[in-house]
Length: 606
Image 1 (cartoon, helix red, strand yellow):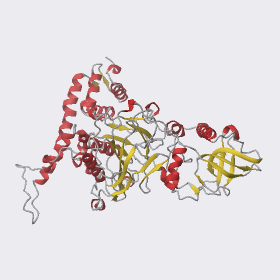
Image 2 (image 1 turned 135 degrees about the horizontal axis):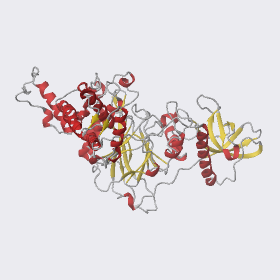
Image 3 (image 1 turned 180 degrees about the horizontal axis):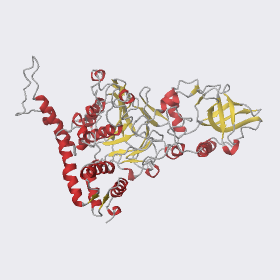
Image 4 (image 1 turned 90 degrees about the vertical axis):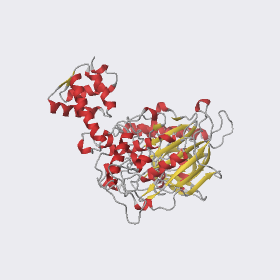
């Protein structure tokens, strides 16, 4: 049997890695190697590194089944035994607590450590109730408490020398305060069923979803131009049909009569857009991409931002300047029509939270542990967690104070959340952020990868891309962790006699421009891959609920029939922030009159 017959891809990778280090195996040993990886929780690279160390120590360069048995007994089993007795990462070539095979072993190790520490303590003055433990009669509270306690699942001291809880966060006094509400929230119990019943959580149009990392920064200028042009033409065609426009005129041709132009809003310089710097970049079919300055003085109401596809009517007597007199507004896409395959129309509870999940002065994830307590208490059907999970703007990340890799910290965090919420049965949806220091910083962003996910969790744990259109029993949620409200709010200009607020205008643009990120050029810290953007960041339908977290103030609004929520961030610097919760209940399939599936929503202090 050759390396390719081992039954899984890992055997092929092991064979190539071993050959690179000058090691060879007999044919029957490849299958044994493939079994050792999941058995001892090793990746191919980690197992090969340990095989190289074993070979250097023993002088065995040809690995037989007998040699592998020796490697397993003398090398792997000894390291596992050290981990069970509380060995630190310095005692092993595999860093961190991942040497411990199961969560129960980690609980036992930490319980033994606490028991040993308690045996050397004495009661404080005035405390007569505390019993003194001795090594002969150990008493540990961890043995009595629930084995799924989040505090046992995560030990930040393993990757930070200053893992102390935030004093400001722990001393907050407004826990559980409801800061805004939407819909009929009177008498709501705000408890779910833990994902029981026929709950179906899936990505809408999964065939077009991003499933893994991709190469970015390889875009050709011609391809970028093609994407922008196609977007202008597609929206222009919809606007032309909607407003019954006969034809679009070319930008550069003077006309004495009023003309209608199609194009994209831009700025005439590198600065911020203002009413005097607006230009219109024409489409390819009618204007060959020619640009023209726009005079907005005749427009009574407008709301414009760079990248916005618009149809304008006005005069262009010289071909050098366009005086706009009318701005045609777009319309959103139709809503999704549920079918019998989407499951029942039973009322479901959804909890939504956005990172950071730790305060800026600590790495203890106390806010996330408090959120997990809410999850286990209320048992929502679905919990949507948006990044950042390990924030690139965190003090200890910026100052390089972490003692282990970003990936290790994140994986321990995931492990904590998944294990700590298993008893609730809640479906978990993880969405990355461009601020996640351990993940690919490109928009659209591929989903997280977590190969250590156990089989029992695979049905309830979902890793999706940013952005994502998610279907929960036929109710469509538009999800993005990118702070689009802040990005567009810094660029949008408007003039209006009405009292519409900026949030509502921006959200309306998102729906009518039919894109999760209609701003172009993008915000200065956003790396945009336009080819994948065109395929994966366009709205397939108008979502029933749009989750759009931001640094700006939390809200819940109904915009053109879509319920838009900014749940805020779970932490704000050193203090606690907010999270959101919703009740959804869609109408049965084939119902003609549409009603909002979001029956109630609240934003709550953590």
